[in-house]
Length: 242
Length: 307
Image (cartoon, rainbow over all chains, first blue to last red):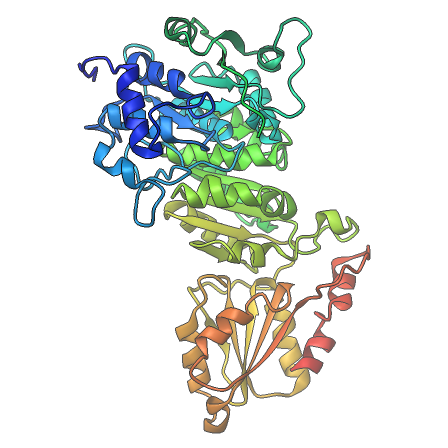
């Protein structure tokens, strides 16, 4: 189910985003998830727009559903969306809202927008794939959920982080895009950013990387974590004060 | 594993044994718990046998519903269970977003009802649960009045698709009355009384005490409401009553929860609604379930007076 297609370039993604934003250049906030999404869809996820419901596909859950332009751009670049739909996004009749709806867009695994729902849903999906014994020869499928550092304020995430660690859910990966937007922050005892520690103490493997460095993000997502879930903290520029 | 009890004594026991049968028989059925009932027979044995499909998340009810939503996305039919305040009220947004908004199905089974834990106080009372569920689209609501009904409804709900809420109670009628929609238990000419779940025996005694010639309809399925069944029962009354009927609904939860559906069913004629159920104000009472019934006007004498 590997799809051979030329790698998607940064320029291509910015062009697709421009169809929605009208801007040639995009702020750091608008692109906080862009590089992680780029790496996931280009190098990591086994997903196929021709078979978006394949039971053995990898699952990508965008929990942080705000500002989905980067997500829609990546989906369009990878054949899940027709780019002709992008300019009309967020208008009446469009399938593409300010927050994505899984029932409207093939390849979108969850409807999101309300924060703190993706990680529990990802946990349940990972448990369900295990319960149904759905496997691939390469060890997949895996379930990857993207959350934001401010989103982790929501307590529901911590219910999931604790239980996923105890349960040793190795087919679950959380990518935390850290743009330092949590109001009260995540102080760390041992590291500059305490986000990874929240996962480590609960029994996850946790790796902090430069969220703009594609090779580093890929390496972290491929890190071995046989018996435990994996958290990748992807640090990007701090969000401007709003 | 044959977990079914010959004679389940409570709805909770009937549910847990039915759930165990279903998890054991079908590898697409899972039981998701947040500690409540995790230690109750036959759950520990079931969990040991099917550790992937008996998921106890600990005291984490948001996660309980979120995990159920994820299981459903992976093609599993989740059965989710806790006390009503922790199954419906605390994770209400998870019911909306993690199940309904995702287009997923689940079977949500509560215990405790309005005040089964009679001395438990407000934190363990959930008379609002059916009204809350009723604000969300697509849910079927079952309120069984007997353990045999609970057993059958659980099995049917798990076999079906979609979103089902089962509200179990320690309060029961003497005998089961199976059937879809509104089941006619007594035919009369002067008016219609709808009894939901475990209040049926009280309603029948109250009708006898009041000496009124009333039709009594019973349902374990207040949602979707059997509007056609109500209209048919009203049409069968004496003509002057059929033209402008009095419809009394006795529900074991918040009074008036079903006013909307009765109004919609009888939108074509003038009618009078009498809505009996638990009172809206917080009474701050402990004691037995019978004492709570009396305080909420749901004992035989007060229901008879209202008829």
